[in-house]
Image (tube, rainbow over the protein chains, first blue to last red):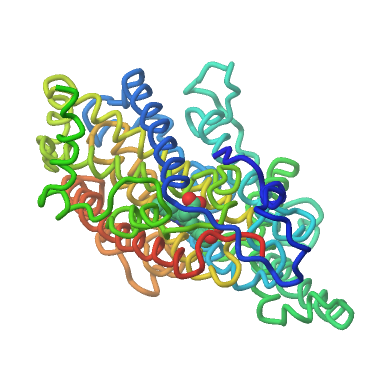
Length: 272
Length: 257
Ligand code: HEM
């Protein structure tokens, strides 16, 4: 808490400047009482004051009594879950509501075990861990935040997009022109998809994306890349899977917006 | 009278009652600074000494601490709310109205509980963000990061279960939207992939287990209440103890070596 000089400056107020010792000096430690406890106290007072003022000024929402027969439009989850609700636009509920959240949680948990870069432990740095920081900033700051912002501010009745200055029109009709990949563009030319087997197309594409691509990259690079060698095939596999899954979301958003594509892989049991 | 202030001080601070509670005096000596921390069960969360950079607000943003503070606020205000609230569909909404309009400071307590809950979700995210950016999850703190991720999940679940309790339109529909996803759980939800293989039905699947029925109804209210007021807070408290203990055991707040 503005506790004054950093380590370098502190080293400059020595009792008597001895010739620079080669051994590491004793760690630069200070008493928790009063220095840390004081900061914590000030911090608590500020937070409590803010919370108090906020709670006096702004009332918690309270609507009509619960009525199971009257569904509001739109029905929104609490804001911190709107990222998931927003993903429902691009994925079926079993993906957006179950598989992807699970992968987010598990993915966060495995971070310390797949990030074997020993540098950047205990201080802010970008250059020493470019990949890790970029991934996290992309996933957390860009993807997660923009999904929530979209869900909170830009979604109106029917979960349609409304700009903040637009009036929410519950009767707004948006043509459903989305098509599944096997029925789209050049793939239509493959003939009747029902006969060709729609499953195969999506399966092929996903297998290319999630399996062939990473494996090929591994065989291409692992001989020459020390990073990959140290990572080893198992950690590499986990990282690549999580990475490609995360990137899958913006890819699907792009395909939807640019080409109106709904599903890539259509099967009788599930669609992706 | 002021002449005797010194005497008064002496009488108090040297009385048997006072010295039974506090075992050091207040002169600012290194020994007392240490004792302030070591001989106080609450302060004892801290080590007596800490590396200088670790108290810089620019390093930790104090975000873990703020998260913990908000959790404590939530416990205190939550207990006050529990005195007035009954988790029964017939009463819940009326109890909320009573709290807001008749109970002295009821509105303030409710608001504080609500806003602190939103705040905690935000600060726990920011705390995770700072821990990531300082690379503090790296060895030897891997396990504490995992504990943290579980705490994050619990924080979200606490917020979500609490959202239902006012039993108004906002709460039941938000919870309906949220829990609807459970019906699509692969294998375990009746609309999920391979549901037929397992044979789950709307009345007997993951979502029905969560809600205690097929819609967000009275049994859901009771379930969420118990989760919100008993199960999840206790679990979160236990994990916070582990979290704080591990910070110490992992060598205190991380820092450049
Ligand atoms: C209820 C939620 C949580 C509480 C109350 C909490 C509390 C704290 C506190 C008070 C600290 C001390 C340093 C600081 O204030 O930054 C800390 C450190 C730490 N937390 Fe949390 N935390 C929570 C959730 C999390 C989450 C979600 C993560 C990560 C996903 C996490 C990972 C860590 C790690 C690795 C440290 C050590 C940091 C270091 O040594 O620099 N915690 N936590």
